[in-house]
Amino acid sequence: MMSWFRKKKEDAPVAPASSAPGASVADAVPTAIPARVDRSAELIQRWDATRAEIRARVSALLAEAEAASEPLIQSVLTDLTPLTLPWNAVTPHIRDARDEISEAWNKISDEMSECEGFTHEMMFREGNKRDVASLELELMHERVYGGAMARAAERMRRRALGVDAAQHSCKQCGAALDNVTPVSQSLNVECSHCKSINTVHPGDALRMFAASGAMHLAAEAARPAGEAMKRLDQQIKQYRDAKEVPLALLIELDSMSRIYWSTRLTEEARYNPEEAKYVAGKLERYTRDTLKTLRRYWQWREYETTRAPS
Ligand SMILES: [Zn+2]
Image (cartoon, rainbow, N blue to C red; front, side, top):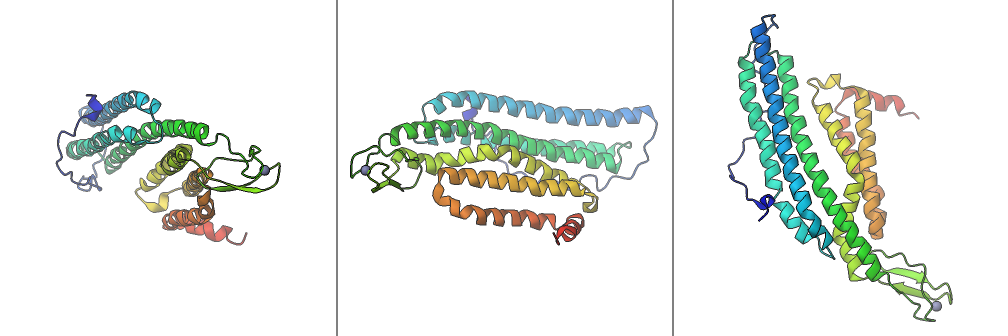
């Protein structure tokens, strides 16, 4: 049995990560005593090494899972389940690794708060590293898993085109219908020869692809924008004072979320044309959610007011 099928070792419930590290730290004046400086440097170094070690372990696990996925991808016909199942076993490991980062932070932040050289500012900066590391593990997991699913979905699509799109002929005159774009919905196609209208139904293979594969191709296409969006969102939240968030970051988040959602929805609709009529509405709804977040910042509200007349 491959090791990525391993069960989680323990299921102990995990306490939510403490969100306000350093609240009890005295605002120590940085001193020039080398021993103290060394001590804080040593703590930061240890904290950096811990995260790097966890990240390397997750990266190795994902590489192993990815390699083990290849034969499964090659054998996908109309069903992605055989590939999904082993990946379900990977998910708890990623959760464990993220918990591990939180626990490591809880421990080392105690030591940091006892270390005289540690200022609030340093504590805050080190605490932010926990959230960045945790998000990066999540993104790495999604990237590798999503990549495997997208490769399988693309295989599924190519095969479906070969199987389903083969020869549609006019029920009236028997001429080949050459305007058929195989999709998930039935199409009315005019025969270019006798002009009669033929209803062409997609086959099972394309239906299966549209139902289970298309979303993975859409997710893959939107992934770069999605990752950028999540990183921006996190970067914005990492400001201790919301007033200090640069407007440029908020503008970038707004535009990145539009790119993400429009790419994702448009790609989905490309494979499921019956979804096309919902794209505009969904895009509006999802961007409205981002706007709600942005409007919590005075910088953004002011920016909206100044560009309103245009
Ligand atoms: Zn015809």
